[in-house]
Every structure is written in C-alpha cells, then in structure tokens.
Length: 377
Image (cartoon, rainbow, N blue to C red):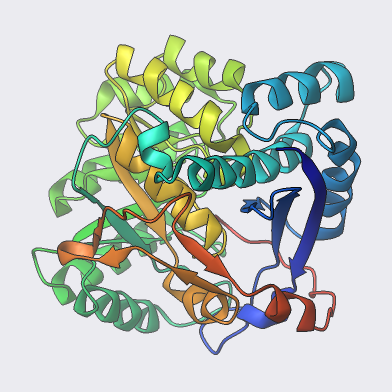
C-alpha cells in the first residue's frame, strides 16, 4: 500500500460563529492510498494562519507520496531532517501533527483497531473531559456563569473559565470566581486559566484565594518562558499549576520538567501530534507530573485524537472539550465515541480515530477571512 495523495481542507472561521463567541478556522488533512483506504487528521491553526498551515502541509506532502503510510516514525524523521533541516517551529509542528494524525487514523483502519490500541492499549474505560467556557466576545460575567451552569447540566463535571482577561483586576476576577463558585453545583469543579496575564507577585495572592474557594487548577498564571516564576509558584502552592499549550517541541517540555515548573503539562494534540504527545506524557510520568490534552480545535478529528491519547497514557489529567465548536463540527464530521457519565467518553471500538468525515461538506464551505481577533486558548 502506498500513499497517492494528500488533501487539505479549510473550515473557515465563520462556520463556528455563534451568539456566544466568534468562530475559529480548522484545517483538516486527508491522506489517500492506492488501496482505497484513507485517514483523516487535523492541524492546529494559530490565529488566522489557516492558509499558511495548509500550504506547509502541501509542501510536506512530497515526502509522503509513494511511501508506506504505516511508517509514521519515518515520516516524522524525514520531515524534521530533510524538510525542516532541524529548523522547526510552531507552524511546522502543526503541519506535521496534522499529517501524522491522518496516518494514525489510516493505520488503525489497516489493522482494524482503534488508535489507542496501537499506542499501547487503554489505561481506562472512559476518558474524562472538561468543558471550556470561554467567549472572545465582551460579555458580562453573569453570562459566563449561565454558560458554565449549562455545561454542567449537559453532563460536564469540570468547567474552565478565564476570570482575568480584558484588563480585569485580580481582585475583580476573584470576586467573579466567588460568584461562580456560589452559583454552581458544589460537585462541579472550576478550572481557572489566567492566559499568562499575571506575574509572580499577582499570582501568589490569587493562588491563596483559589485555595480558599477549593479551586485546584491554575493554568498559565505567567508567561510559559518564565520558568523561574512557574517553578516558585508550583513549589509554593498545593494547587496544580498547568502550562505548555503554546509549546511545540520536546525540548521545551523537558525544560518545564527539569525546572519542576508545572504539576500538569498541557500540549495541544494537533500541535505536537500523537507520537510526541505520548512521549511527553512518558517523560512527565517519570517526573511525577500529569498531562492534560489541550484542544482548541474542532470537536472532530482533533477531539478524537485527544481521546485516544487520553485513553493510552497513565497520567491523564483530562481532555479539553469546546461545546461552542460542536455544532460547526457536526456539519462535516461524526464522532463515533459515546459520551458517558460525568462528561467522559466511553472507549470506542471503531477502527482508526473513530470518526466519519463528509468530504463534500468540506468542499461546500465558502471561505471568508475572519476579522483579526486575539484569542486565549
């Protein structure tokens, strides 16, 4: 079996626009073979870079056409050494991850096995997820409380919020968190993402208040490159410090582990890819560190890849789920994973990623550039 073609498809941002939030573009990858088998993947899209990522994928395609699709490690090696000449970066990593995910999907179909079995087998029968409750529209905080409550009612037992954005002071953010805690069912955990808006001096008192509120997760309190502050905060609190979503190579994650700068690493599944993700998870486990799946992507190929990774690693902290992307994803993709109790997903036995993609729907989308907007992931 040989690879005959690699296609890219852009789902424009307006497809996932809603009253709740502005949309985000998705880039999907299809790898085709001479045996009529194919695999689907997804690449992370930083900001409005969907055309750049798609172009990189097409440039990488020549390293795959005519090759054996089951040799995933060989593709990664060739991409790193022959294509990139070891000059890697975020966009390169996203493109490689998109292709690699499609290769894993294809490999699972060839072996008639779900991908998590190819990754070494499942460590659990259900994969826990948490609901991301962010909006990139300026809304009063009571709207976020209502949205979080609806996610809990939909079955999620953990919700993630962003209380310190848009110039909100630490004091006001903590006041809003207190309001949210009092409004939510006590059984619903609150995860806090500071999106790198704090520094060590402001993060320390914030952590003290989060402990009082019973909040156990603080994501990206300071810039990820500030290893010293992250390490000091991690050592000084019992709350889990979470970081890593903007990183794209093993060296950066190794630095976090070496400095003990986090309790939980959260690589994005469509930025690092399944192979690197499981490798990062193994290194983290050796350092008594957990791993969460960051997933600011579609709730189709990307979510499926995250669920497989989450099933296969021992030290999982959770998989990120974006309720606001579900309706748009349903327009082109069906996920063959059954949502179980407490916001988790029961393991699928479907081969590959466990998804069906409607290619005709992807080709029907009319492309309109999104208005440039910063977004915290």
